[in-house]
Image 1 (cartoon, helix red, strand yellow):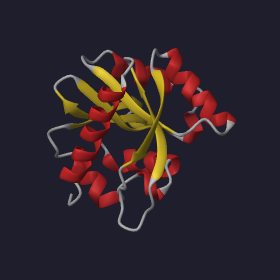
Image 2 (tube, one colour):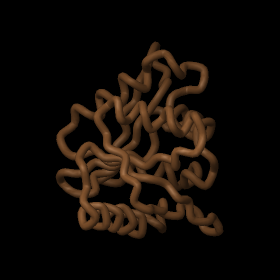
Image 3 (spheres, helix red, strand yellow):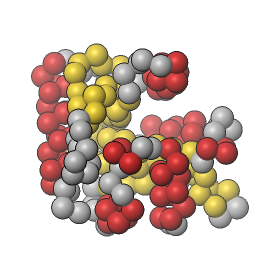
Image 4 (cartoon, one colour):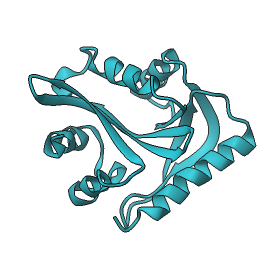
Length: 165
């Protein structure tokens, strides 16, 4: 797997406060609970989806992106369908539905069968000095309040366990 190609897509798709930076992201590849699915053509990575096993039955998407020049070509759909074929409940974070792009993204995931949760949620802070980012959780199953709280606790516990990576 060519991490440099993945990281270039990551950098072009996410603000710096939404990832850990080159060295820390690269170190995640060695973590037993971290996985990356890639989409490649002619030996070049054009998209990726990285995820964590929060437990034996819950997969949490950390990053999902396609090379900006290839967006709209079906690569993202292919990657996400491959991810959905894995065993377990699927979880991801999305921005609040303030802009048309945010609303389209939520609708896309709903078309894949994910459920949008209105509950208040803040993404773990990836880098020292960054501020909290309010997001929403989407999942493949409806979560009651206790399940939602347990899930977000698992996300934050995982993040605390890898802070020093």
